[in-house]
Length: 448
Image 1 (spheres, rainbow, N blue to C red):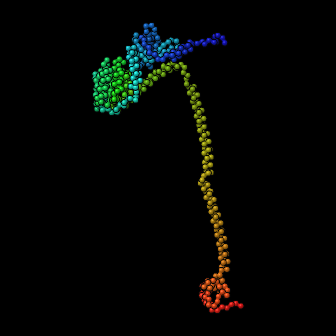
Image 2: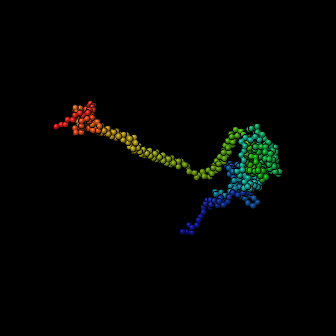
């Protein structure tokens, strides 16, 4: 083997691909702070820009499925904080980062504090679903903890009046922004819980920046919500705003209006909720479609037209269908033969046939028995007649019919068959064919 053959020679494509794999596997999502520059926003909706500091810069890309979620418009020279993946753009071999999230740098420190407190309270169990209380289905009195001059109280009262005007509403006025706001909110929650005059509490304020909403991210407010025995709904800011109070509260509502709708009984609520779900599903579907469309754009050139595969699959389906029908017919035929054999076997062993056969045999035996009995009876009858005739022939009665008689001694009741057994003066009884008579021996005459 030559020296050239022993070398592991990379192509440029292979080199870029393996470097990208190393970067993807070696770096998790990272937070990066820098200044925006060279911002480009083409028609595709994707953003391309650079992040720089005083000594270096790096190329960045943020796809439209991500940048559409931002609540501000980035500009060149703006200091931002981004969360991104480290990567390599293979076609040009350029090192770049793919931005997943971006926020203004001023919010970065607050965001870090937010995450630290959130993790701490979660570890302490303040967010546990086990401790969440159920909302009353039809509350009689609703307590609203908010600023009496803000837009939130107006939205809540208007919504409650529109949906269920008979509800009693108690407003607990607090300051919702500033250094003393967190302590004020905490004291008011404890006061409402102590007075226990409401079925449910609604902690709310309108939208704002992370700094504006920071009063609801304080630990003292979180502890007051957790210790409150009355079910509490947190409705701070807008749908995209999340505060610590949202996680500790029994229920989180997206807006003050949504919170009012949540606690007020109204049949139309279900229709509204359904519409909101449809809207969220639509937005989610659009996001998925956008992401899939980007993936489709990168691989569309490698897609093979599926017509050939469909034709082959269709042919296999026809073949399987034919084989299935043939197998079914064969199976039915086999089962039919088996069934016929079983029917014949069952017919041959049918107890009714055996009973009928035994019945015929019994009938024949009975007839033979009757015939034999009749023959025996006739034979016995003939023997009886013959015996009767013989008996009549030797019967003394027949002898008496011919004029003979027999004589008995009245005293001994013995038949006198010898003249020597009587003497003169004995009383004797003479029996004839039709009766008898008694007499006294007056004279004895012996034969010579």
